[in-house]
Image (tube, rainbow, N blue to C red; front, side):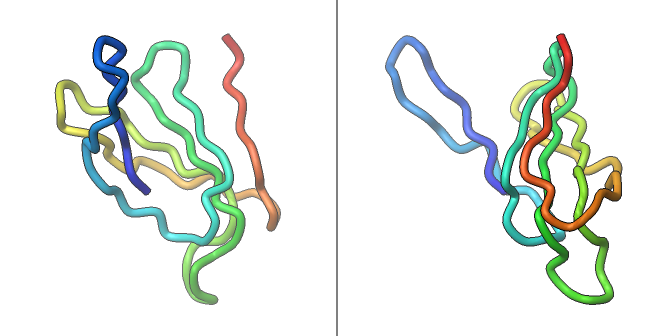
Length: 86
């Protein structure tokens, strides 16, 4: 999974980095209201012995340090979207 930064002044995107996502088809993602957490849905496992479908939680590291994987929340096969209440 890639994390991008948007520069509203120039209208350009730049890549912060690529981060592991053990699964196929990350269907959706969202930042929490504080901007300190990013959640990505995992539609299906990448391999039979790996973690299954669910939501992968990442900590957003300060500055340009990117994302740190923290936890996988297991959910049924086919997870598409995640919404964090504000």
